[in-house]
Length: 505
Image (cartoon, rainbow, N blue to C red):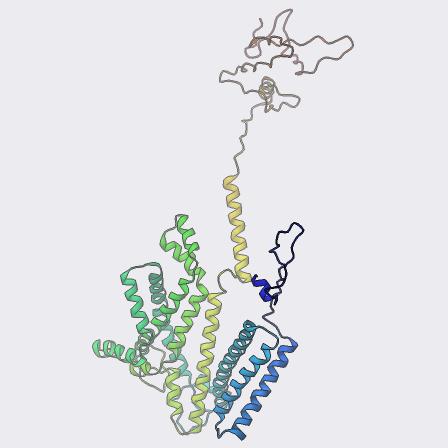
């Protein structure tokens, strides 16, 4: 009894097909493989989904209204959702196997989680933009500071230009410190293996959960109290970079681990040093992921409030010098605006929060453009650049591997014709490729021995002139080398003229 028989519900005592020779036949027909559809919508699937949703809602209404003393909106929705999942699993199990049921139920759970996250994000962004709709339409909100405006002034006076400029200056300083240090540390952790690298990775992972107030206190104690510097945007940039650095290092380290090892091995096999392999292979391959790591660190640092308050202070005036004087950021301005009981100040606070989210979105878009696409994917500009580079390389390789042409030196026509005749040239005076070249003395080399004739006849000795057979009567002259011209004919009866010296003998 085989497994296929059990799946086909064949009883164990069922007779098998026995051939004529009496040998039992153990082979059974294999069932055809029918692929299961794992994506797309079907009619039965849609009906099961909506039917389970309606049944779960009715079950929750029945439990909360008639059978059990339940109350509360959250409990109602949780009960309805759990009932929906159970009923949907039962309805799907009527047509599919267990694996398909688990797949359908987990798909619904993941879609629900994704929908809840998107709903929460939409509520945060929408609520912030809706509450700040009164301040955002005014142009002075983006071009003025709050130095000449008070809490009771209307929205047509004052703005957040000082906070926007402060945020840009602080995040620029933090990125200038964090990006090179973070990427260099990630490359060190990924390429250099040893005890110290494990120690650095442990410290980085511990610093990921560092409270922001601790980073602010450290910069305040070292930079302001220890060195005697004043509160400024530079000090705030230092504090923000302390918060961003572990995020960038940790994320970049994870991205660099995803680079295939055969790429680095191929580069090193070609003789490239380690630094060139990192610069030309590892970093370009992980460029998109590294841009994401920088964005994660930027999003962490751009929203900090307490380190900025400790190191940069607060001001209502515009200050473009990061090395002297207090400076304010958008998160600190939002905190200062929303704690006021005045509606106009609250509107300014929500408008500042909306501008902060827009600024993060712009920075994210810029990082996406710089990072490009993932490994193996090129945009049109990169594809054109790669095609041009390939054409240049192909031309260069063709020039390197093309053999040089060996040109004969040109002489005057008389000597050229004589040399061609010496080499056995024909007609136009071009040298034959099959003719032997003359030796150093200008003498023609000895002819190669002719093959032995058929019939066992002896071949003529080396250096002896080859005798041509006499033509029959009426026949034309035998084919052979052309007759010599007047300059090379015999000079007298029985005398021949030497082609090289011109002497007659």
